Amino acid sequence: MFERVLSFLRDLPTGSGARASTDDPRIAASALLYHVMNADGVRQDVEWERFKAVLAESYSIGGAELEALAAAGERADNEAIDLYAFTSVLKRHLDADARKGFIGLMWEIVYADGELHELEDNTVWRVAELIGVERRDRVEARRKAAAQAPGATGTSSDE
Image (tube, rainbow, N blue to C red; front, side, top):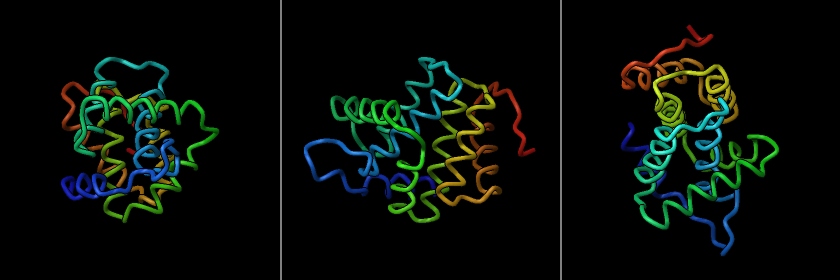
């Protein structure tokens, strides 16, 4: 399923205008991934590297294109009033399996530093609700990400 999500994300259209827009699903995805990375107020190098790796893997990009997408996501998140502008774009462009997969990518970012902070957990919960991912799917994605993160700590209200 993860490969299907990556394939689907790669095939998402890029914005047709010269200026990046939050209506571009790639920018929306980058902004949400950036947002969850910063949810606890501390951006660690390992989280930043995982964020960029997820973008690189998802969109088969690197170099300047990767840096531009990461910067566009950061800028969009910093300018956003709420998460709905991003989640509504993803909900329109992703099918149910791809939305579940996206939540899995968010958990990968959360667990990049080996810790689960309650604000990160809350952010993933809100995004999952807004894009229509069921609680059980969100919890399963969290468990998978936690199992792949050596030394992960923290619990969630889902347990």
